[in-house]
Image (tube, rainbow, N blue to C red; front, side):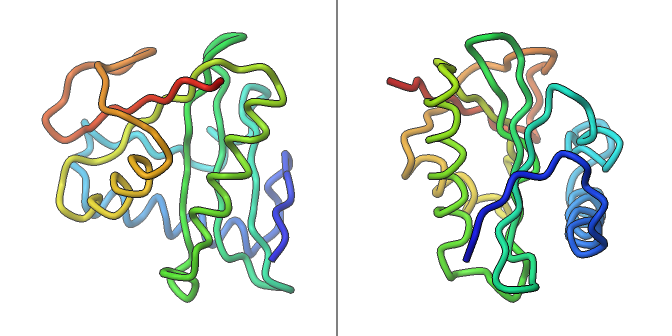
Amino acid sequence: MEIKQDSRLVDVRIIRLLEEHVAEMKSITPPESKHALDLDGLRVPEISFWAVWDADNVAGCGAIRELDQNHVELKSMRTASAYQGRGVASRLLRHIVARCREKGYQRISLETGAMDFFIPARRLYAKFGFTECSPFADYRADPNSVFMTMTLS
């Protein structure tokens, strides 16, 4: 598998995965608590996006949004259903954390769901050193959200 950065987001395979992601988040999360970015939201300068490729198949994706020169938000983490349980998310998260360190960021934060559906995601983030925190950036306290952060060293 290979991880490639992509800023244009025009490949139909990536678009399909992202559309599935947004549709699933809409089906699980109340509208006022949905924070998944659509394609236009991911095609802005402050977003860095990566896709995990297995030959011609997109196995997963993830992005960061720069909040300021020291702090980024992890966005759009998704593993294609055919690749779940194969370490794609861990590989991608390891890659993103390494890129953030290289760029000199000091903190990565994220918002994920509080529902049982999101337990695997919260476990993954905790395994990597993320801990629960207060809402950050423009987020507000929300019973449907869990906020996590990690300090980079």
